[in-house]
Picture (cartoon, rainbow, N blue to C red):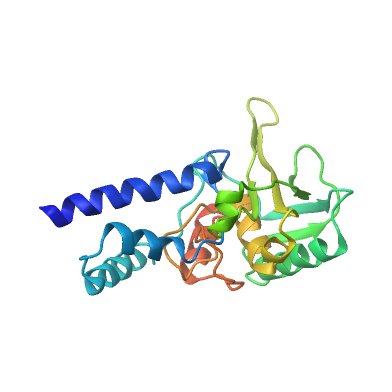
Amino acid sequence: MRKRTWLTWAVALLVLAFVPLTIDGKPAPVNFKTELTKLADRYLPNYDAQQSTSSTQKRETSSADQTPIENIVQGKTLKKTYYYHFASDVSSSAQVAFEAAVATYNATGLVKLVAGNATDKQNSITFFVYEKQMSSANTQQGMIESGHGGPKIIQQTGWGAYTVNHARAGLNVAYPQQAIKQSVATHELGHALGLDHSTSKLSVMYPVDQSRTTLSTADLNALKAIYND
């Protein structure tokens, strides 16, 4: 019973740790690899490490079939073709990261991302950059927001009905070494295309940057579900 009480408090503290990092209701990819260890050492000194490892493996197994899908995309019929463009202030290094992410998704054959401007009735993605400084307390703990992105579903009903996604994906240039990376761009583009956060470290949609640039089987299955492949 005592062990369970410690675990409850630890979970509550982890939730609180994420709150300052939320954007549009979701935490963006962050770098805080030491934080979980610190919290576990401080609040769970007697917790069985083997049991913790087993729980992690169970979580990854349970999410292995399909990466979660953004709520607003679920049940929508979207075409696989997107037209993307860069905001005027996107640096060449950020463009390189985004283009690498585009190539990753195009290689799946499940979506087709084409450079150019979309009409109102076509899927589009805007790649952008922004600057957001984290508090000194967060940066000292290695908790850095590196980007954010997501879908914007527009539905026209009645005569000439259509459903499109006018999505956005951005990198936080306040921390170029952590944010201007292919892995972060791949994560944020995943959000734009409709993928939600995953509990599996094998997924590019894991909310803490693992420097992964290859989509997992679960990521591919989610794209198949969204784009009816």
